[in-house]
Length: 434
Image 1: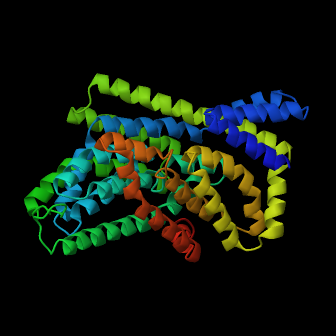
Image 2 (image 1 turned 135 degrees about the vertical axis):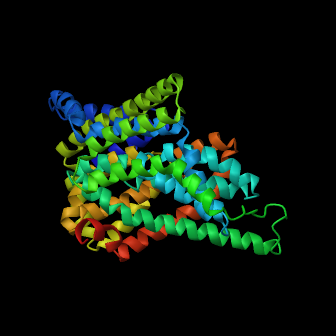
Image 3 (image 1 turned 90 degrees about the vertical axis):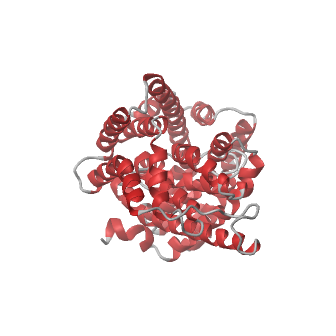
């Protein structure tokens, strides 16, 4: 009964437009007061929610992403990748996905990934007669790689909540990230070949892909050389983390300094745009930290009400198979994704589900990867998918065009979850067996 009342109140407040941070925090305080718990618990939870060294990496990664975005590094990255694969069937689609993957490896942000690569790729792909809905869907889905391929801000938050190793989570995201890149790439090639066949193999018909000519070795060399600082930055950030040279928080600071050096040497970032990057990063950081603080108060309240324990008991009594548990969680996340963004879903669901993981013997690192892929879907599902609105703005598109293009990629993500469930080594081989 209490669980139902809490869910009804939460949904009602969100439907009324109350920000999720205030919904969670307000409900947490109310629940504490109604049960005669000391309100000091709320203030203690508020302070402890942000008293974490690892969370310092969040604003640093956000600022690094915005610096790179405002510095226009996406152009060199996309041109370098395109010079190698642009002449292949679906070549610009392949270049777009690979560029998203490379940028994801240095940003930790899906929105920054979609915006950076979308700014360059959308005009180029539309000029080459790719269907608009496919272009927008590809960029929106490619942007989601920003929270799966490490470093990843949601993985950092998940690690803080579960007290799992951030490095292990990052390493576990590599295999699934590569797998999704391959699936997105395969779909791009199949789509391009199907479009060509539907037009009788002509490269001049309407809405038929016009492939760039194969770049010469010198053109590839020059394009790769111009983009080499970006590849070097990715190597520094990821290599330092995996090599044990510095922590994820230290890597974020080093990555930010490196990004500033790159854009200032390129003279592609003036003080006005740097100020914009700082303000936008500050705004996003405040939103994330407010949600974390509200979720911490709410989590403390539901724990004192024994709601997670009751849910765990309910699950273990009625669900004794890992597969059924994963299926139920995925369906719940799919529904929540229609009206919650990724961080909110993570902060609401993980504290409730965490006790059930231990009861069912589920590896929290492996589960975290499945969870992140499912909240990736929330970024591209209407009506609140952030990447949908980013691509709509960048591509000056109708929201219906973007939505029409993302559905195939949502099914690909579901397929990836099934594969990771059936073959856990896709996620856990690198951190635990390599």
